[in-house]
Image (cartoon, rainbow, N blue to C red; front, side, top):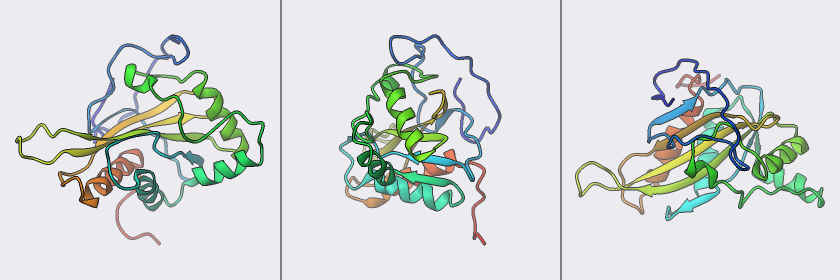
Length: 210
């Protein structure tokens, strides 16, 4: 099931049988402002942050914007940025893994409970290189039509999955949109990134940090 981010309760999701290589059911992905699963408290845990895999007409650097929002909000998370993963992969030329161009199409086709190969194999190998427990996989960032008045601006939408490195289980899956801003306004991308980080890092209280 899917829930609104404000409803912070623990939900158990039975693993569905693997379909082909990805594993998943036939339920559609969650709507904007909703998430599936409960993101664990990530403070002190090593989490790979990958770049956005699919960018649909959104100007600006979506990967950098999301990285800024997440590292600012989750200062106690042991983030492993994709640049560090790329450096580790460069030192292991025989390793069959990459941080970009990953096969993420399965997320748009079904409700994914657990990722299978070839995606899982790549994620597991890169996590082993940098000793990470989770991988945060930004599946896509897109412009979406605003269902409000016809003259309203579209919104930037992030779709992100948090995956357990050892099992491929999709621990949390979220879809968040930013505020209404013109396409060339950097706030369109920034507000979407901030909202996504607040949803993932639900336990972080706003305000000054000591």
